[in-house]
Image (cartoon, rainbow, N blue to C red; front, side, top):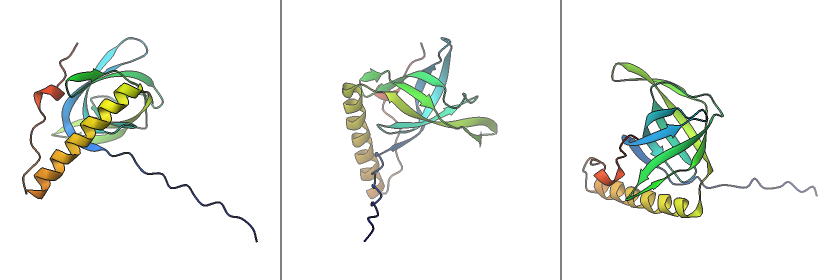
Length: 141
């Protein structure tokens, strides 16, 4: 009887929907910085709102406020999506982390878990998701 390998089921990393309430700074390889808003975040990557898209496969350094700390992972930009937001055009562009230190991954995992618990508690109570605490806001450089 022939052997057919079973497909390996991989579990997606938990992700939290931030709806653009957290700022991120993108540093391009040429040193230019771009402001972005974080829409989704997981320990594998996320989704950024940008005024202009970045080239697919572009390598960037990110600066993201996580809790009381700041993480500075490296990432690769993926294929952008054009969207219309509040009468203006912008882009939602996914990215994946290409370098994330173990401590940074642990911090992200803890914060994502905490935000998911808060979101679930508010949802169960029938409340809208609240504003992001100031500890998640990042000041521009």
